Amino acid sequence: MAKEGLSSKKKAYLYLGVLLLFLVLLGLFVYFYDKALWHVPLHQGSLARPLEIIIILVGLALDSLGGAFGLFRMWKGQPKSFVYDIGLRLLITGYLVAFISAMADYFGVGAHHILPYFGPLQAAGVFLGEGVIAVGFLMMFPYKLPQKGV
Image (cartoon, rainbow, N blue to C red):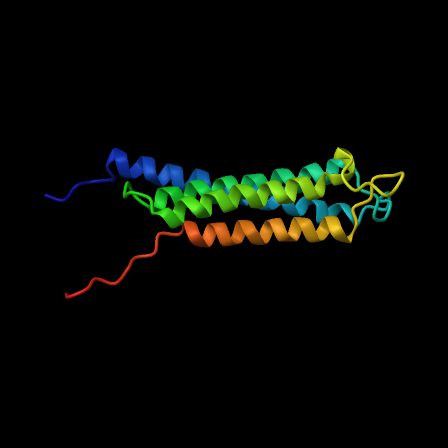
């Protein structure tokens, strides 16, 4: 006799997957929301408004969190590898690099201007942090090794 519907465990995994997808899409929306602000006529050039920087950082945090939980669930209860642990730490380190780079003027690190200014060095720091996050994601992915002797 065929079983009707999904089991409760499969439903829970489906709901968790939809929630993680929503979290990543929300993060992308929040992250790219700043791009829409550049078209507003009141925007003042390259002066860094704290709201814009916080929006970028919240979007990046939501994407990192959603991706990390999604990759965690892909392991399906198997023991995590050493490379997974390094990737998770790289993800956290990359976010910290992006966060500190973006908020450098507000922390007083390297402030060379009277007004907060999101300059090329801060943009490079954020891009570097995003690159480290991407490498961390690649290391967290559950690659399968080929079976020997089969």
